[in-house]
Length: 386
Image (cartoon, rainbow, N blue to C red):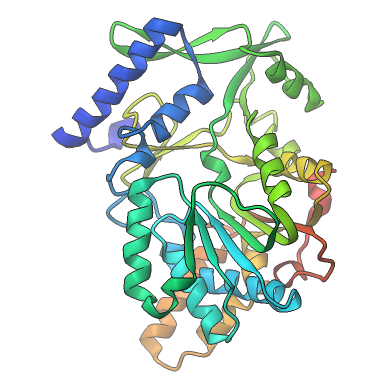
């Protein structure tokens, strides 16, 4: 796959090489980096990390396309789930974690305006300054009359009531890589040699990593490699501490734990995206390609339960969208061309060979007991093996 990647232009390559030099310097000073540390630098290092620069990321001009960019009906389905919660709670707020281009916020607000039930606030928690600027411009352009509802945050709010949305957020949380050698847990680090980044296997960087791998309860064979997300517990816990009443809706690609750590998935799930090509080498092009790790949904559910959240639903993205009435958006169109376009978008979102089954949706609730619209059929909580 790497031979199919087109080379970066001189400007972006120079930018990547500057970050690579910083990473190599840090390795020379402190020793090999955990993969979590490397991933954090590659994605979030100030002025150089992938999400800290102005390099296009989303859509045709970027490296990948997310569901909200594929079609507005994805976000309109999310809005229908939000409407149920906000209506039942007699009001509340929406909080979007990492809003990308801002297009999901635009389409959710439009749909809720159509339903005459807007949130008190549409909060956006965004760490990227460049993306925050992009979101501001888009929202001002597309929904100027609703812009006063939108508030950008630097940290999670307290005593939140409403809906918290995270679409393709967890896959960007840095995780550690581990390997089994001689029936012993080892860690895979990023090292440097003669200006090149390379892998190094050594003893684990922490007892926490060893404990969490052992707690999976899986008898891994030798030479098995995968990832463990040590930051997930604090991340879910912080959301649990934020939510007073309502719903946390998380959408991402991944698996229940027994599928994530299947014996045939013995090289992990790290995937990189560069100019709409996926590959599996995160050590090339630091800062100018996306690095992602699939999500262990069982881990999310267990941490949520430990924090007294209710795991209210777990479905394929296709089931969620169908439950929220995605087909109705096409059936209501009389224009043949528009109907065809929407139908093609729906296929991309729900077909098993596209996004329909790889992407999952998990619902975590607090002080809300009604059956959720998006989970009324096809609920597969049992697959999480809690």
